[in-house]
Length: 313
Image 1 (cartoon, rainbow, N blue to C red):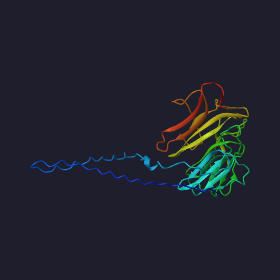
Image 2 (image 1 turned 180 degrees about the vertical axis):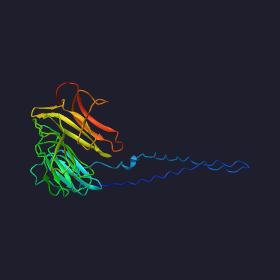
Image 3 (image 1 turned 135 degrees about the vertical axis):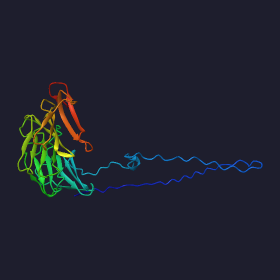
Image 4 (image 1 turned 60 degrees about the horizontal axis):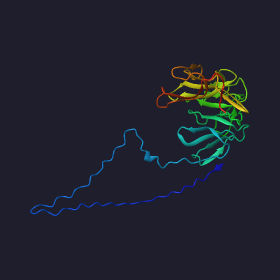
């Protein structure tokens, strides 16, 4: 276990400023009374509008590094609802880590497995002991490494078992149905450096014993993102990405890329196009559904009007 001692230096300064205002009274008039002193006007504090947040409550908060210093970049981080100090972290070359004290200590969970590249992590909302990990990062840089499929833990990360999709290589995202820990959707990008068939959106309803490819395009296009509607897990959005990494070149975009929607928990899908979505050659797509309003869906889309693969670097 890596223990990081965080030292803080608190300094406080108390400044007391007393301002006393004296009103000098004019001399009394002949046969009259001394006039009363003039009172200083008092400013009435403005009430905070309903629903607004007083920024002073957060002005002292600062970001701080909590580690662990292993594995380089990170694409996977997962909290646990109802357990504010418990988090899982996946490094692109450093395995899975867990903290139960808000990041003061981290425990490596993947040292006994045969792969260390992590692309995605998901904790089952209905059973926090069930954790899924997708190996192989999907940010396919020139120095990217591959994964060996989906791993599952039923004891909150103490032990793991590979449950399939071993040839998917790169996992962009995975999500667990909040009602059933055995229902999992995976966005598998596939081989970064060449074509392969095990890519697209996969679904299991038995905890990984069997898998169904529910959305795919071709051997050059894989899944990159998949999300539930927070208020209705039968509604799912997913994106496909046509991409290829070469040692000397990276191409992103093609006829295979696109955004999709499902109304039956990811069993069947409809391609979304038009109605404000960009036309032309599309590349990588990220998608999110608002937790406040399910009618509001956000998508970040790499787009080009050129009718060929788009070089990114």
